[in-house]
Length: 463
Image (cartoon, rainbow, N blue to C red; front, side):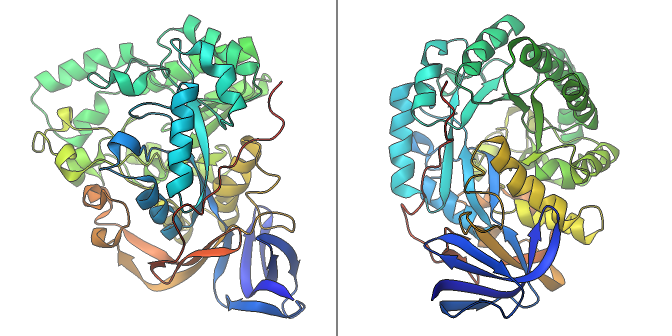
């Protein structure tokens, strides 16, 4: 007898959608067969008329926890993840303290193991000031490394220890060390020299609107940084990815690097595909992020690239701040914090683009699950609806009428700061989320347990 049968659903995979039944035993998918062909089960879920997606692997999350858990802790953050169909997330190392030494990495791991309600992976930091820690961090199970190509945020230097490479020489040195671990490096790709003067000029102009903030971070800041990452990856042979791509021209640079044999890849975020500085203008500091939102036309072109598979992975860049922090200087956009909560909305936001005919279910399954699992070396168990993989899946249904996001119903501690979403209509809802065959969210309620999440480590990556 099977532990669980999910019957009559439409299973979504990279190569297509199919109506099929799925069996689960000991947390693993054991069969996918035509409707009606499964044997009996202890529990049966009827998914008639519903979509069954592989659980989302969110590749870019800043829950942080620790001394910053008043914004989000690893339990509240992973309850939010479960509510949005995220079954595995990759936690970035920024924090107090950052996960950039063996001691601090292990401390965060213990905290996450006690609190996480879904599975998780951990990035370590790789900067010019912790280069001696890189090999050790790999041996502790890091999924990869995070590096910023810009200096620490003023006043937050301790949070960014072991995370910054401000020169190309420093980046090459770090990549040479990362290359020896076999793990990838992911880069926040903006160069400060292209931002400093426009920011001062825009602030002096007296403008305080979102578009002014976005104009203060011109395209060149991202594009020149991406060129630096590609050059460094080519020289060192290090596997690299560009975080939160916001420009289609960046996609072209990545494609050019690939054509030359560089192991270079790209991640983007739903906010760059759904929002722009025009439709998000009303949110002011609540739409402040780095890189910034771009023009409507740029967003449309980036979405076309994403749908065509030219960007392989998807991260929310979940970076929660309290309402008080985002408005610490009233509506002053220049002195607010960078980042928005997004962990629980990514999949549903992207489904609005499927509804509008700009994205396919298959592309969404590839970019949110199958491709990330392959890139980070966890595809032996994650990322796909297939016999032998973990039974990580999300069941969704299309709403008869789109519904406006109700911020009060979000699970993140920083729900009040989700102002950007307050006018967005969603077209689908999450009916159920399962992690390793265990239901962790159903019909609007968290049903999982604190500490259920496992740390997922890449296999056979230490050279």
